[in-house]
Amino acid sequence: MDSQRSFLVIALAIVSFFLWQEWQKDYGPKPIATPAAVEQSQNITPGSSNNGDIRLTGDDAPSQVITNAAPTAQKVSVATDVLNVEIDTSRGDIVGLTLPQFPLTKGSEEPYVLMRKLPGFEYTAQSGLIGADGPDDQTNSRQPYQFEQQQYQLSENSDELVVPLTTNFNGLKIEKRFIFSRGKYDVRVEYLIENQSDVSKRFQPYQHLAQNIDNGESSSMMMPIYRGAAYGTSEERYEKYDFDDMAKKNLALNTTGGWVAMLEHYFVAAWVPDQQQQNRLYSMVSGNKGVIGSRSDIIELQPGQTTVIGSAFYAGPKQQDKLAELANGLDLTVDYGFLWFISQPLFWLLTTIQSFVINWGLAIILITIMVKGVMYPLTKIQYESMAKMRNLKPKIEELQARYKDDRQKMGPAMMELYRKEKVNPMGGCLPMLVQMPIFLALYWVFVESVELRHAPFMLWITDLSTKDPFYILPVLFGLSMFAMQRLTPMQVTDPLQQKIMMWMPVAFSVFFIWFPSGLVLYWLVSNLISLAQMLYIYKGMEKKGLHTKKA
Image: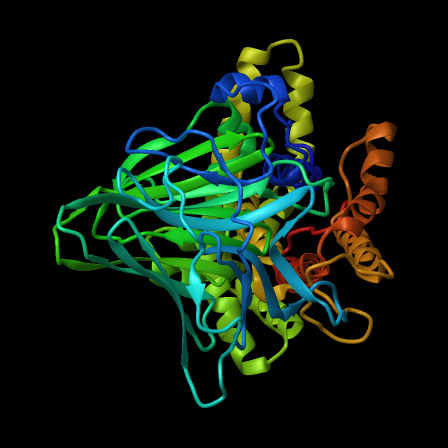
């Protein structure tokens, strides 16, 4: 092996390339289904109106149903310490939702708007009762829900706020209740239904999320805007199902429990039906809207009987512990990719450290020190192997000259040399391969964790989730990489390769300009620790008579 250092640079380049690929796959621009493709996939007659709400019909597969809101419908406003919600009384849908504890941008006084219904764009949470006797079936019509007051506010002395909406439909007395709790982003949505007729009634609860497929936003490589759906079943804890998937095929899965969601980088909206019941998860494309939802089994209510059915609706930041409590796999909407089993423990360690130091930047530095400390034995093996290989170079060159015309003999002779000198030619590579997954896992922790959104460090670093505004960290990273190159000189002899290696620190500094400053801070600290470890290890090897520098 001519140069362990060149392998390190190439490996880092490969890692960066895979990071770029993963980011583009999840957050890059998605192909938007054409109107013709959407009409064909849903059997929609061209020219159909799509100005109203999306509704379901009957007990079979989802279909597009347009039901314009009743002209007398109004909106009920609800405010808690963490949610501001607007409920349309036409069907009791959530048509507006903002997060007062999360500013739209760093330093902004405007709250983050998660759900909204505006001309040309809609992102709403709909729910209702369909079926033969369901008031929200397409063949039925009724008056909007009645309400006691138009504005609700969670008082300082209360931990719970109940917002009741009532209606009567064809012998059914229905109360739709939204139950809000202090400090919680999940809302309990319940139906209290009484059959006041003299015949049995059949209906089926459903809930889904509807969002415009194209809202004019776009994604770039380093500024992610992922907008798409996801779901979980008893067999598949987490699966993404973006708008392109919806346009190609309707989702149709039966499961015990389960959940459906719409993702928006740091935030998520999700419906979680009764986890003990059988539910059917579905999706569809209706006009320019993508829909994902769930419906429960048909309920038959006998005369005089009363029943309560409900589901949970979550809308807010991707807080893993809270999401895990609601449904199995919902916490995986914090998408750490294929290395989630490494990222989750690292995130736990990072948050634990932060709870003591109260600064996410310091927490990143401390977790870097811990990771490098744990990896030190492998680092020592790596650098010692590199030094041993460097000392063997004259003997290797001698064998190469001796067997330059006989490749079959050169291989066994090289292996015999390694065995006699007790050198593992892969000893400098394997430790790096072990460390790469940790780097990737930490990368996704810094990118996906809402806790780092707008989190300050010190001085000019006011948001660890965005790039360094003055590019100081990427420059320092490049300098640290250059210092590591100087400490372990290149052994390639080709002038072109030498120039490429020499400019690598500059290339990676430019590449890291767009990375979150928290990630660059981690890699910079990691390089500085590596430099200290290299000096310490090389000093020990020189005492043993091993050369650590190129002659």
